[in-house]
Length: 223
Picture 1 (cartoon, rainbow, N blue to C red):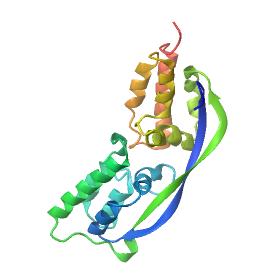
Picture 2 (picture 1 turned 180 degrees about the vertical axis):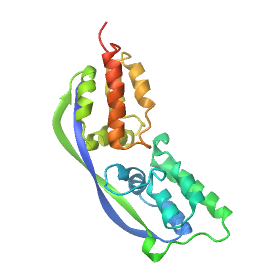
Picture 3 (picture 1 turned 90 degrees about the vertical axis):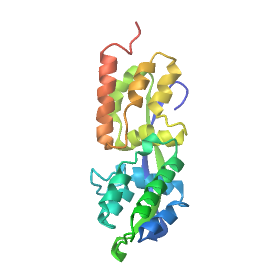
Picture 4 (picture 1 turned 60 degrees about the horizontal axis):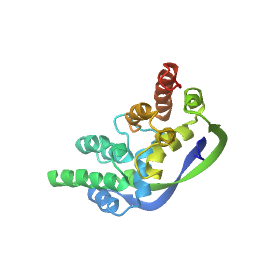
């Protein structure tokens, strides 16, 4: 963002192999303790931009692997409910992962082992950001412009912004707050949207509905 303008960006995530793979739950625990936080980020959020099949009940790669490779439904369910959007940073997510795995290891007499064909491969990612050459001048324009946001733009401004800014705040709220208290109620409504359990098209639709209802109702207009 530049001054009072909302500069619309687009992005993509380029997956990068780390060369690290594990076959056991204890091995996963060991590597998670030290793996780059960017890898944890990718395995929670990467599915939104990287085409790969993820079942709705397992919205992160760790839970998916626990279910399909380790055949541990209990662990998979516990991992699947970890919501990274509710943590200040990926270090908090890392600790939650370790806690869940430690709890499961304590419960099991014999920890599960995946077959050699179903190892967990740690991947990290590099974000590439593009300039769309489009800007928004006033908050009222969000109502129409949000529908033109690509999936990458939604990801960059609503999902990745929370990590990028280090405050758990998306770019929409950051920009709206520059207008003083006028859009504080709108910011509160945006804050209630949890991006983790939605696809990017669903997020765009949710934001579109919110902006349309807010600005068409006259709440965002000068009185």
